[in-house]
Length: 142
Image 1 (cartoon, rainbow, N blue to C red):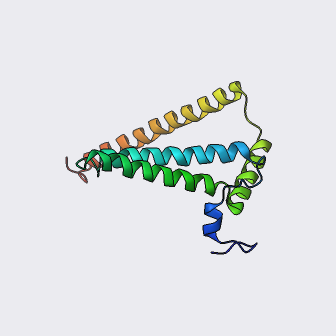
Image 2 (cartoon, rainbow, N blue to C red; image 1 turned 120 degrees about the vertical axis):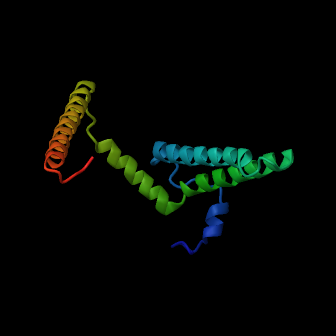
């Protein structure tokens, strides 16, 4: 898979440079952190699950190698120009969002929970009515 400037994917994965260092910085750091956390969880699960009966060196070396390789790939992924441009655009769009105040959030959450409780009650009553009617008519035998 070739890049537009002539570099290959392998050369991109092995480079250590940062793409547009100061743009989309927080979004890229959080994305890389989340991917590395997933890698850590995978390494832990690997050491406790499939490798549980293996020798100690294998339970240590394989998960550490797995975490190291996936962490490097996560770091390189957030600096891959196409993905980095996407994350920069996401951060730019998130800056435009008007976030609600605490009071607005509480009111909106109350409305949603109240609506769900009301709809739950209505559906329960409909269900109970139809169950009673169909049982009374002998359509449903209990």
